[in-house]
Length: 111
Length: 118
Image (cartoon, rainbow over all chains, first blue to last red; front, top):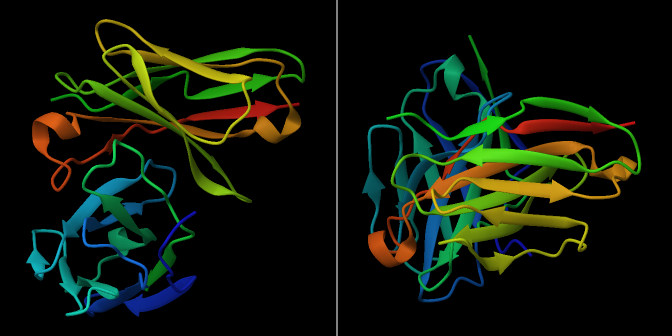
């Protein structure tokens, strides 16, 4: 079973920042926090991941709470192309390539 | 570098038939995973292959099976199709945790095969 909780949907206007929350209160010390997104009619794609510290890449930023029980994916300037379902996933360091997807957050971006 | 390719992209079958789906991973990737996506159940892990061996398996009946070839290409087979097997079947490849480390191992997904069972 998925060990993360996300809102079903969120909305944003184009070029505004978006903060997508994820709760993972049962996270263990060996769990990494991964984010994937699925654009319409496509397979999921990797967005970002982290363990304890905040992370930045060209796509997004990941802010991780100090107790690691929650995290937030930040899209600094949403574009229409960012409209997708965003999945927050916990991956154990010893896990093989099995991703346990939750229901994700459907992000709508309005022009 | 070419991405993950899946064939066919669309497939229509009738109940009771069997189907084989194919997945070609990114060159150099040795791990291949399969997922089923339906509106009701979302994305669910089917199985994972590495070096021609099934390394992990999800909670699906034995009608769902797979294999991996020496070139890392993979196929999955569903026998005795049921209406509920209608879904998008996604394949994902990755280098391998042992090589890249779990913290950075990224799965790259193909576009999927849309299977409709009538």
